Length: 115
Image (tube, rainbow, N blue to C red; front, side):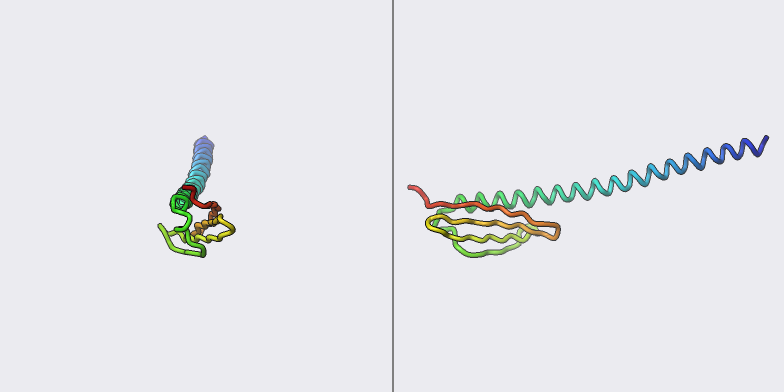
């Protein structure tokens, strides 16, 4: 009788510890995945804000102030490239923001200033 009770309790403990281990591993994996996704989302928002701010700066400039050509710089750890082309009183501006995890592009057009 003694062996039967001890074996039963041991089996229950092994099952309980196994379930607990599976639970802990699952939580750890999900937690890591959530933290990674949060970092990706935060990065996406920062890139999008930089794109939007750059476009607003360029659109608020006078037509003659927007230079044709390519410029590149680094802002807040992101590589920013602005390519401007001109075609009969219209300047097309392609803004690219890159980092090691991806890139975003935005194209805007700037027409002649109307006085």
